[in-house]
Length: 110
Length: 124
Image (tube, rainbow over all chains, first blue to last red; front, side):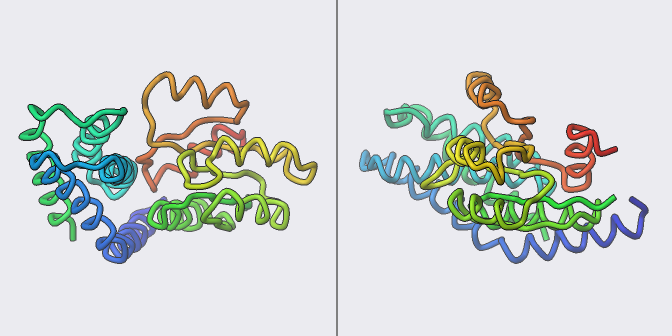
């Protein structure tokens, strides 16, 4: 693949990123909402599943758009929201940190 | 040489990036399906050279779709590569036991996805 083709590919990826940016924001929003519900001791099974799924999707896609750190963070959140029980309340500060960082990472890509 | 690939994935963003990658980088022909059920129909109609199949999909997931593809004489011989964001080794073993051609991991690099597939399938 020559430089011109790489440039074309990069531009096409930028277009796709902008097209799918609302989905990325929505997934981060689901994580934030689950964190808030966990803090209030009101996390439902459905919401836990949504958070797990949102984190899984972010982990799968962010690195594809060059946001490797986002994949690592999302994978950590996915593990924390997996299983049959709520995440340990002691992990809440880490979950909030992850959501904030993911928000910043998503916002940083143009 | 041009090849025909069917991508089955419920996530629009992954499907679009993979299609863009295979069409732009390798010049392959790509068809897409957004569910396992749709993928079964599309595979029989399109007769692709290979199928890129997502693991986690609502309804019929990747492993179930793969088993159905193998039951149909029209699609039984098409090489299937599973695409997954699951990195745990027990998941990987479970997927490998299905008899798929290979397991590819998300996130993938759009610039090298086609060469990875070509290498696995001996298309180089």
